[in-house]
Structure formats: structure tokens, C-alpha cells
Image 1: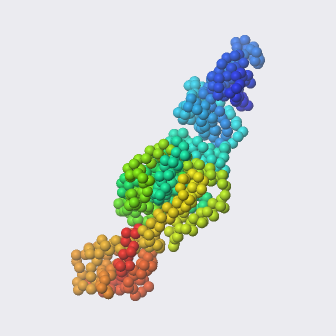
Image 2: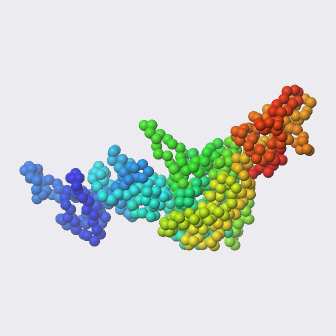
Image 3: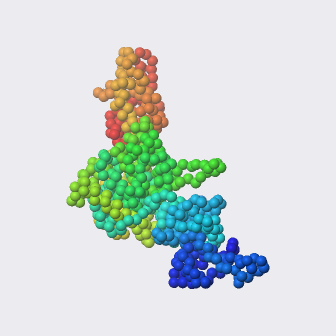
Length: 598
């Protein structure tokens, strides 16, 4: 019965009678008739013999003295192939399951055979497989006995599979028939399908044309598969606008590119570890994050860095061995009533320019119709309602279709050339603005490619024009130059506006002002304007913790250091009440252009 060479007999639907080479395992997906004319229902069988009393007494080894036995073990489960997981090199078996709900596949890890296999059987029951309760051990024995020759690769992460070049999604692999997505079977399928592509194009995409925020959302979703191909780092865009302005609709539309918006869209309301899991589960696609106000203000900038950098935090097992880090490449489509830096400030944290560059603010609240520019003959409420209904009825089609077209073209040099041509149309004057320009350029490229593929019913060039418009708005809002410089200068300007009368006093006064507590420095009048004389601790405080040399560099670059007489960029002053001190002389007028721009 435990013959390791036993073969599984696979029955064609048109075959009605079987003559198994007993003892053996067999799988039948249809009703069959055995050699005695008995009907056997579909399932996994163990074909063997029941030894008769005469045979047991004589110890004869002859089939003539045995009665045939056909044990039904489970509903039809066929072991199709061996699997090797590309993420951790673990082995498994690819199973074909025939259930009342239809045919599906599932990968069972080989490690389950090291225990009772109870968890694996529980998941199989959940997928519709029926296993005879008294044959649970036999079922595991059957699975373990199979030795398929075909080998498939698997991965627990969607997106590009590096060794094969295929694009892997739950339930579907584009570009290879020998790669599968390996799921635990417990989570929701984010990449579900409903309706059809034509319905999505007609009812959703046509209404997005002329609306830069909505075309940006679709471009973000389609750009995910392009990031690694054109060498653009991850990051995101953050839609900023008042409540009910239309930001969430843009996220629903972006989500509908890959799956059911009600499931695919996520929220900022989670831990950093949870965010890493959500990002990894949407690798090479899109991560929509609704309502930044739900994020922890003290950690939101750290989370923005993590999303853009594409790698989670390392952890260890109980055996003090490092677990594989989660990783991803994607664009984030965030939304909120306030910017990333404004939300971080609630927790008492200074804004980090790097975090803001990784999650770029986009105006989604003060356009012609709040988040929209064109309502296509509808009022705002009906426009919002029709699109919300449409993405629920049609979703999950254009993303895979875009990847199919991309793989069919198979022109990496041409893709890089196209990206270079679009990128050249986004002007930048420094590396930081260049990173933002890269992001808008790859979003524009994705939109223009989808138009050329016939997947988006928009005029050629419209996706590029919309991205150029939004990038231009961002550039005019933050200004040119280094982002850290802007942040330092704005911080000092805000510090003067807040504390100019309470923590500074006239340096030329006859006596020291005793009403000043926690002194930041002094002020003096020069050429009809007030200059502020900062001491070192106050200057560092105003610049939100940047190092003193970095602060001085930013002030020099803005010509904001009004007077100094040594290499330290400071001037020596006699103080009211006696004594002297070297102070930084700052012209607030040189800072005015930076206030409110970061």
C-alpha cells in the first residue's frame, strides 16, 4: 500500500471504466466504473486489496485470493508540480483542487508534513475540499507520495518575478505559465476582477479626462510596473484638500486599476509594521492611503521614508536568526486635509525636507470644482456619485492589461528612450527637484503608454500635460533651490514671527530687558529695518535641529547674514548691562520669500 513507486491515474472525462494497477493512488475528476462494474464518485482513491481468511492462513501472495478495495480519501486533489519559492528557497507542491465552486490551485508548503498537517487541511476545507475524517492521515500520505517531474517557481509577493521576467498576481501570472503566486490562503484577494475593461473605459476613464488629479491617480497606479524598468525610485503624491473635496474618489479610481477599490484602498491608520505588510502586498502596483490625520504624527515622516525606500525593518526569530525583510517598489497615493509636514508638527516634530520630497503635495482642494477641473456636464454631487458606482461595477482590468501590452512589446531600450524624452520636459534646477520630476515623468509615461495601447480613451499628450501642470504647481509653491535650505530659512522666519517680541530685545538699550525669558538674542535697527541677532542655541532651535554649519550655509546662500566680521560668520556686540557676545546677524527680509513654502 505504501509503494513509493505508486502512480496516480489521471482519468480523461471520456473514459468510463478503469483498471488500476493495484496497489496505487488515483485521482478522478468524474464518475468512473471499476473492473467489477461498481461506480466510483470523483475523488482521491487508494486502490488496494483486502486479504481473505484463506490467504491469511496460507500466507499466499496471489491476487486471486484477494478482494479489491477502493477507498475514497478526498474530493479530487491532484499534485501538479513541485514548487520552489524564490523568496526563501522553500519547497512546496502545486495542487489542483476540484470543488463544487469550480477548479482552483493552491500551493501547500512541504514544511506542513513535519507536523500533523492540521492547518493545511483546515485551509483546504475552507477552499471547498472534502477530506474523509477517518482518512486524514491517508490524505497526507497520498500528497507526500507524489513525485511530479515538473517544477514551478513561486513567490509570496506580487509584481515582477526577477528570474523569469513574469508579472505575478494572485490567481494569475502574466508572461509565464510556470510561475505562481503563493498565498497563505487567509487574506483577501486584493487583485479581484469585476465587470470588464470596456465598461471601465466608458464609465470611468472618459470622465477622468480633463481632471489632472484623477488622471494622476490612474497614472500612479499604472506607473508601478514601470519603476524598476526605467530606474525611478519609489515615493508618492499626497492629495491635499478639505473634507469631501474629492480626494477619496481619486484614490478609489486609482485603486480600480488593480482591484476592488473597497478592498484595495488602505488607510494611514496602522502601525509601521502593518504599513510594510500592505506595501509588500501591492508590490509593483499602487498603495492608496486615505486620511493622513489617522497616522501617528510622531512616526508619519518615518513611514513616508520607509514607503519610498522600499524596505521594511529587520526582525529576528526566536532562534535569533534574521527574518527576511519585506520589500516593495511602488508609488503611494496619499490624501489628507493637511500636508505631511503639518501633520508631523502636531506631534511636535520638525518637518524633514526628505520626507516631503518623498510624498509630494498636490492641490486637490482649490481647483475649479474643489478636486476637479471638469465635471463633463454634471454637477459635483452627481459626478462623484456616478464615478463611485462605476468603479464598484468595473475594476481590476486595466492594470493587468497594461502589463500584458508591456510584455508583448518587449522593448526595454525603447522604453528607456521614451522615458528620457518625457523626463526632459520636466525642468529642475537641483537633484531634489529632479527626484520629484522623475516621479511625475514616470506617471506621465504610464498614462501616455496606456493611451497608445488603446487602454485609455484620452487624447495623446493629455496625460503628460496634466502631470506637467501639477508638477509646475508644486514647483511654484515650493520654489527652486535646495529643500533643506528652504526649510531652514522658513523655520527661522517663523521663529522670528513667533518670538520676535518676547525673546529678543534692543541690543543698544542702556539696560538689559528683564522681561525677556529664555533669551534667543537681540535686535538692532540698521538702514531703517530691524535685524535679529541670534545666539547659537536659538539659531539651532529655530532651524529645527539642523547642524550649525548647515544652518549658516543656508543663511549665506540666501544672503540673510547681514553683517559679520570673522570666519565664524558672527559679529561681536557689547550687551546692555555689560559684557559682550558674538551673535549671528540675520536680515528677516531675506527670509520672507521662504515662509509658508515648505
